Image (cartoon, rainbow, N blue to C red; front, top):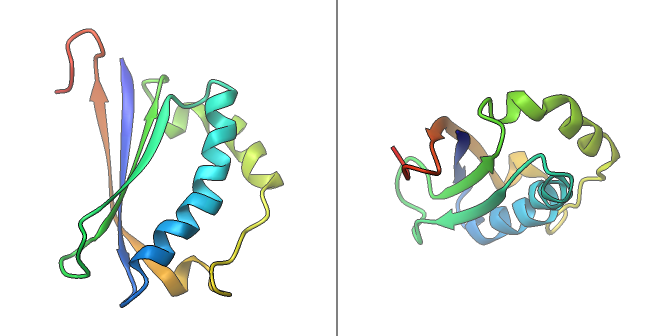
Length: 114
């Protein structure tokens, strides 16, 4: 069994592309290290293509550990402690968007998604 964690974000007006860039330069920079260390399996960002709706950017992270982030938190926080935030056009995350929802799904790779 593995866990897939979904994070739904809403970009501030006109900042959807900048939000995705921030995620790539910060979240995914740390996630790449976590994948190399075996803490995560994969990560990706998806975009609704619109500024409308309750959310417009989705980040999906797959963990081999069935507890998801909770199962790797101690090791991941060591990665986070070494990361220096990269600004996008001089802006940090709160100026680019916000997390509006998150969900954890469980998947049995032998049987496919639930």
